[in-house]
Image (cartoon, rainbow, N blue to C red; front, side, top):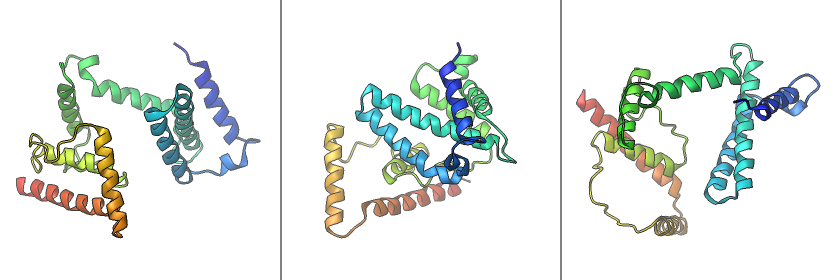
Length: 216
């Protein structure tokens, strides 16, 4: 199967960044583009959660454009010199390697089985990682970071995954209202909810690292 429109977009990016193209595009670096990647990613999330078909198409395109832009930039940066084909080749190899239950002889009947396969493969792929916290971007929004860190804490027994919920919730609507109330209460009392959660996460990550150290 061929994708002529995708090839056309790759050529469009090259034209804009090449001689006689757009001066702004030519001046950009990986670092200067980060803000746009973050912005476009959040806009895609919003489209996926509440947008129309056209919104999703547009925002997927914006994120795709950022990927192609970075790849074209790299293709013309000494010391980097890779393009979108290199990125696609690496990703294909990664996905095939991560799915031996699809492309190989491994067996994984449930989603939990698949996660176990992935964990084993990551241990082989990333032998330098010594903590379950390795690889978690600390710049993530605090709530998303909390979800990741709590998952890793449960994985090694620092938190009990099977413990009964101390705050039973019926729906995400109820949860959203509760979170909004907490943030509003914090704001009314001059407290920063984002900073407070990050502080609690630093403490939890410290407990995780202490637990790992004790195990060794």
